[in-house]
Length: 222
Ligand SMILES: [Zn+2]
Figure 1 (cartoon, rainbow, N blue to C red):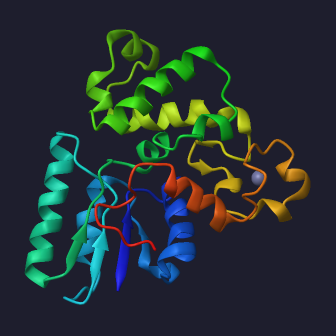
Figure 2 (spheres, rainbow, N blue to C red):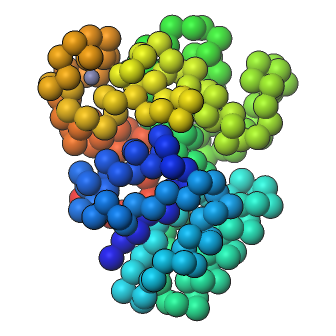
């Protein structure tokens, strides 16, 4: 059985719940919110897992010690109980969605400065470069933050803000159009910029998966 240990309880958790439902065929209780990267190892420790299980941990380390400590603890636990571990090549849900080629269009972003930062980050994500390390001093000044996860959250929020309830991801909220069928939403979808033929959550998520970095290090989704 697969389990997903999400780093948060909010937007990323809701996104993984939808992926679990639509693509991974997982019961809801197998998507486990962890309230922060540092809580992941403890949650895994308290979950009954056997050699028949594989845990998906959708973080990568950033060179920061807290990530390294968490991943070392996860692998120690995996060795003790012989379960499998699948990691990602991005370090948080927000950086994954920044690699989606239409996130700025669906998000309705028209601000030239935000778009230029996004484009630079997007290009670096696809080139496999640590984008948060490569930000020049101008970008660091714009965002005033050096924490990569907070930076990704801020950038994703700014890139999607203009879409309101549809695709905005910020203040712990996930825009409803990411994970629901738009054809049933009527007036709520009035500002929705999704592609017209992507009416269901499943079609939209599949489009996102096909136009972003690999979701997982090993391919699980058919
Ligand atoms: Zn919509």
